[in-house]
Amino acid sequence: MAGIKALVALSFSGAIGLTFLLLGCALEQYGVYWPLFVLIFYVLSPIPYFIAKRISDDTDSASNACRELAYFFTTGIVVSAFGLPIILARAYLIKWGACGLVMAGNAVIFLTILGFFVVFGGGDDFSWEQW
Amino acid sequence: MSGFLDSIRCGDCECSAVDWGERRNTMASIAAGVLFFTGWWIIIDAAVKYPQQESFNHAYHACGVIATVAFLMINAVSNGQVRGDSYSEGCMGQTGARVWLFIGFMLAFGSLIASMWILFGGFVVPQKPVVYPGIAVFFQNAFIFFGGLVFKFGRTEDLWQ
Image (cartoon, rainbow over all chains, first blue to last red; front, side, top):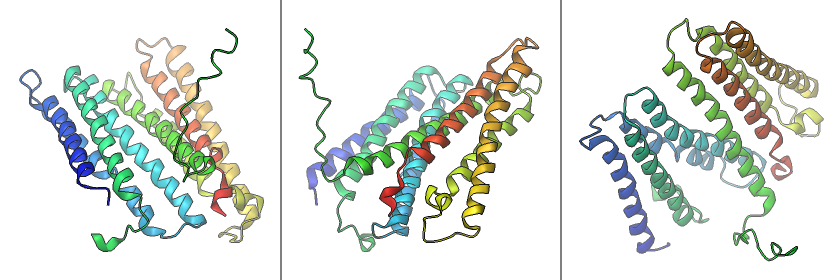
């Protein structure tokens, strides 16, 4: 167990990331809430990794291929979370300033999720009974 | 002066638990994911900017769809099945795997060539006022093609034994 400090630091960075996202929606000069759709990508991003981990419990040939497929899809979800604000801005649904804030929020949130996996998920004693 | 870059080290990574071979597969998967999905977001962008049939003929989407099908076909069989040295034959055997891979690569090359044809035959030669949709189709298919190649050949199957 990596400790409380890591947990507090990760929750702080998560809050900062969500703050950037909400600033991109709620500031007076922006005012539209379309960017909140990237929340779907935030929620989806850890799922491929957990599915791959669940399907293959030990390191054998099939599990490596499954893990790599999970990395492929996770990367796709991350790319989509960055692509959506750009397309919204190019379609003039949101302003470019909002797009920039949303992308900053994306970067912080995905680094937070990665931090969770690095700090908490890497242990061999990871078991499903925790959930 | 000639050796001043010798002392610069590219960041000694201390994750000694993971060897280079295993990271190669991970890096290749991530790179392939970036390429593939960037390709699709490029075409989504073009479709959002030019929704009319006159500026972006909707039939051109078929090229990217075929490229995606080719990507799936190419990566559905492992190199071991094609060489015949994997212990499980799969449902079609070695010859079936070779035929499947052959068709997959033909579709991949075909969609890449078709995207170039669309760009030049559909946009450049008729001198359409907006060329961006043609460029988007080309880049979509190029990215999907190279993403498929990276996913197929960038990973080593030695780690799968």
